[in-house]
Image (cartoon, rainbow, N blue to C red; front, side, top):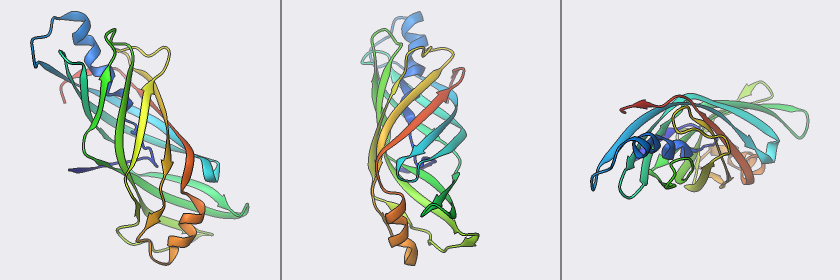
Length: 209
Protein backbone atom coordinates (compact mmCIF):
# COMPACT_ATOMS: atom_id res chain seq x y z
CA UNK A 1 0.00 0.00 0.00
CA UNK A 2 1.34 3.43 -0.86
CA UNK A 3 1.60 5.85 2.04
CA UNK A 4 2.39 9.54 1.79
CA UNK A 5 5.76 10.67 3.09
CA UNK A 6 7.72 13.95 2.46
CA UNK A 7 11.43 13.83 0.94
CA UNK A 8 12.25 15.35 -1.21
CA UNK A 9 12.73 13.74 -1.17
CA UNK A 10 13.68 12.23 1.36
CA UNK A 11 12.93 11.16 1.71
CA UNK A 12 13.79 9.46 3.47
CA UNK A 13 12.94 8.08 4.66
CA UNK A 14 13.63 8.15 4.41
CA UNK A 15 14.44 8.01 5.70
CA UNK A 16 13.04 5.84 7.86
CA UNK A 17 16.32 4.71 9.21
CA UNK A 18 15.14 5.39 12.74
CA UNK A 19 13.07 2.26 12.68
CA UNK A 20 15.73 0.26 14.36
CA UNK A 21 16.00 2.51 17.32
CA UNK A 22 12.57 1.53 18.52
CA UNK A 23 13.43 -2.07 19.17
CA UNK A 24 16.42 -1.43 21.37
CA UNK A 25 14.77 -0.59 24.72
CA UNK A 26 12.99 -3.96 24.81
CA UNK A 27 16.09 -5.81 23.70
CA UNK A 28 18.00 -4.35 26.59
CA UNK A 29 15.38 -4.83 29.26
CA UNK A 30 13.43 -8.02 28.63
CA UNK A 31 13.87 -11.50 27.10
CA UNK A 32 11.92 -11.95 23.88
CA UNK A 33 9.52 -14.77 23.25
CA UNK A 34 9.47 -16.22 19.75
CA UNK A 35 7.59 -13.94 17.39
CA UNK A 36 7.16 -11.16 19.97
CA UNK A 37 7.19 -7.59 18.67
CA UNK A 38 7.45 -4.08 20.03
CA UNK A 39 6.05 -0.90 18.48
CA UNK A 40 7.37 2.57 19.30
CA UNK A 41 6.89 6.10 17.98
CA UNK A 42 9.50 8.82 17.52
CA UNK A 43 9.07 12.50 16.67
CA UNK A 44 11.10 13.25 13.54
CA UNK A 45 12.68 16.35 12.04
CA UNK A 46 15.33 16.58 9.35
CA UNK A 47 16.50 17.88 6.02
CA UNK A 48 17.43 16.72 2.54
CA UNK A 49 20.10 18.17 0.25
CA UNK A 50 19.22 18.20 -3.45
CA UNK A 51 22.54 17.91 -5.21
CA UNK A 52 21.63 19.16 -8.67
CA UNK A 53 20.27 22.50 -7.43
CA UNK A 54 22.63 22.79 -4.43
CA UNK A 55 19.71 23.38 -2.08
CA UNK A 56 18.69 22.05 1.35
CA UNK A 57 15.02 21.45 2.15
CA UNK A 58 13.69 21.19 5.71
CA UNK A 59 11.67 18.07 6.55
CA UNK A 60 9.09 17.68 9.30
CA UNK A 61 7.96 17.77 11.92
CA UNK A 62 6.65 14.25 11.52
CA UNK A 63 6.63 10.89 13.25
CA UNK A 64 8.12 7.46 12.79
CA UNK A 65 6.17 4.38 13.89
CA UNK A 66 8.45 1.34 14.06
CA UNK A 67 7.83 -2.31 14.87
CA UNK A 68 10.65 -4.70 15.74
CA UNK A 69 10.61 -8.47 16.02
CA UNK A 70 12.50 -9.05 19.27
CA UNK A 71 13.62 -12.52 18.21
CA UNK A 72 14.87 -11.95 14.67
CA UNK A 73 15.71 -8.22 15.07
CA UNK A 74 13.84 -7.57 11.81
CA UNK A 75 12.24 -4.13 11.52
CA UNK A 76 9.33 -2.55 9.65
CA UNK A 77 8.15 1.06 9.84
CA UNK A 78 6.10 3.90 8.44
CA UNK A 79 7.35 7.48 8.36
CA UNK A 80 4.87 10.34 8.15
CA UNK A 81 6.12 13.78 7.09
CA UNK A 82 4.23 16.82 5.77
CA UNK A 83 4.89 18.18 2.26
CA UNK A 84 8.19 20.07 2.04
CA UNK A 85 8.89 23.28 0.15
CA UNK A 86 12.31 24.31 -1.12
CA UNK A 87 13.58 27.40 -2.96
CA UNK A 88 16.52 27.64 -5.33
CA UNK A 89 17.59 29.52 -8.47
CA UNK A 90 17.41 28.18 -12.02
CA UNK A 91 20.24 29.21 -14.39
CA UNK A 92 21.69 31.18 -11.50
CA UNK A 93 19.09 33.95 -11.38
CA UNK A 94 15.49 32.67 -11.82
CA UNK A 95 13.84 31.96 -8.42
CA UNK A 96 12.10 28.58 -8.24
CA UNK A 97 9.93 27.24 -5.42
CA UNK A 98 8.89 23.58 -5.41
CA UNK A 99 6.71 21.61 -3.02
CA UNK A 100 7.19 17.85 -2.84
CA UNK A 101 6.17 14.83 -0.87
CA UNK A 102 7.39 11.25 -0.65
CA UNK A 103 5.09 8.29 -1.19
CA UNK A 104 6.19 5.15 0.62
CA UNK A 105 5.83 2.06 -1.59
CA UNK A 106 5.35 -0.77 0.88
CA UNK A 107 6.91 -1.05 4.32
CA UNK A 108 10.34 0.23 5.24
CA UNK A 109 12.45 -2.79 6.19
CA UNK A 110 15.70 -3.28 8.05
CA UNK A 111 17.51 -5.01 10.87
CA UNK A 112 18.73 -3.92 14.27
CA UNK A 113 22.23 -4.79 15.47
CA UNK A 114 22.48 -7.24 18.41
CA UNK A 115 23.62 -4.38 20.65
CA UNK A 116 20.55 -2.31 19.79
CA UNK A 117 22.61 0.80 19.08
CA UNK A 118 22.80 0.77 15.29
CA UNK A 119 20.47 0.05 12.41
CA UNK A 120 20.35 0.15 8.63
CA UNK A 121 17.04 0.26 6.77
CA UNK A 122 15.83 0.53 3.20
CA UNK A 123 12.70 2.22 1.87
CA UNK A 124 11.24 2.34 -1.62
CA UNK A 125 9.89 5.82 -2.27
CA UNK A 126 8.19 7.77 -5.04
CA UNK A 127 8.89 11.51 -5.11
CA UNK A 128 5.87 13.58 -6.11
CA UNK A 129 6.00 17.24 -7.11
CA UNK A 130 2.77 18.91 -6.05
CA UNK A 131 3.42 22.61 -6.73
CA UNK A 132 5.91 24.60 -8.78
CA UNK A 133 6.51 28.35 -8.99
CA UNK A 134 9.05 29.83 -11.42
CA UNK A 135 9.95 33.50 -11.37
CA UNK A 136 6.95 34.28 -9.20
CA UNK A 137 4.47 32.53 -11.50
CA UNK A 138 2.70 29.24 -10.70
CA UNK A 139 3.41 26.46 -13.21
CA UNK A 140 0.78 23.69 -13.54
CA UNK A 141 2.19 20.21 -12.88
CA UNK A 142 -1.02 18.19 -12.52
CA UNK A 143 -1.87 15.57 -9.91
CA UNK A 144 0.51 12.82 -11.04
CA UNK A 145 3.86 14.56 -11.48
CA UNK A 146 6.18 12.01 -9.91
CA UNK A 147 9.24 9.81 -10.28
CA UNK A 148 9.45 6.05 -10.55
CA UNK A 149 10.11 4.34 -7.20
CA UNK A 150 13.65 4.66 -5.88
CA UNK A 151 15.43 2.87 -3.03
CA UNK A 152 16.73 4.91 -0.10
CA UNK A 153 19.03 3.30 2.46
CA UNK A 154 19.78 5.10 5.71
CA UNK A 155 21.78 4.24 8.84
CA UNK A 156 22.23 5.44 12.40
CA UNK A 157 25.23 7.66 13.11
CA UNK A 158 27.75 7.74 16.01
CA UNK A 159 26.17 8.99 19.22
CA UNK A 160 22.77 7.54 18.44
CA UNK A 161 20.88 6.58 21.61
CA UNK A 162 18.09 4.03 21.43
CA UNK A 163 16.03 5.82 24.08
CA UNK A 164 16.74 9.46 23.30
CA UNK A 165 17.10 9.15 19.51
CA UNK A 166 19.77 10.74 17.37
CA UNK A 167 20.83 11.23 13.78
CA UNK A 168 20.27 8.91 10.82
CA UNK A 169 21.60 9.62 7.34
CA UNK A 170 21.66 8.25 3.83
CA UNK A 171 22.04 9.05 0.14
CA UNK A 172 19.67 8.54 -2.77
CA UNK A 173 19.12 9.17 -6.47
CA UNK A 174 16.14 11.14 -7.79
CA UNK A 175 14.81 9.40 -10.94
CA UNK A 176 13.30 11.37 -13.86
CA UNK A 177 9.79 12.78 -13.42
CA UNK A 178 6.80 11.96 -15.64
CA UNK A 179 3.24 13.24 -16.14
CA UNK A 180 4.11 16.86 -15.27
CA UNK A 181 2.59 18.42 -18.39
CA UNK A 182 4.59 21.07 -20.21
CA UNK A 183 6.89 21.40 -17.20
CA UNK A 184 8.22 17.83 -17.48
CA UNK A 185 11.27 18.72 -19.58
CA UNK A 186 12.27 21.64 -17.35
CA UNK A 187 11.82 19.61 -14.16
CA UNK A 188 13.97 16.80 -15.54
CA UNK A 189 16.70 19.25 -16.45
CA UNK A 190 16.63 20.59 -12.90
CA UNK A 191 16.04 17.96 -10.20
CA UNK A 192 16.84 14.31 -11.09
CA UNK A 193 20.25 12.84 -10.41
CA UNK A 194 22.47 11.09 -7.84
CA UNK A 195 24.29 12.42 -4.79
CA UNK A 196 21.28 13.63 -2.79
CA UNK A 197 21.50 13.23 0.99
CA UNK A 198 18.97 12.97 3.78
CA UNK A 199 19.38 13.49 7.52
CA UNK A 200 16.72 12.66 10.09
CA UNK A 201 16.76 13.51 13.80
CA UNK A 202 14.70 11.24 16.03
CA UNK A 203 13.50 12.46 19.41
CA UNK A 204 12.57 10.58 22.57
CA UNK A 205 10.90 7.21 21.92
CA UNK A 206 7.41 6.46 23.21
CA UNK A 207 5.81 3.03 23.40
CA UNK A 208 2.95 2.35 21.00
CA UNK A 209 2.00 3.43 17.52
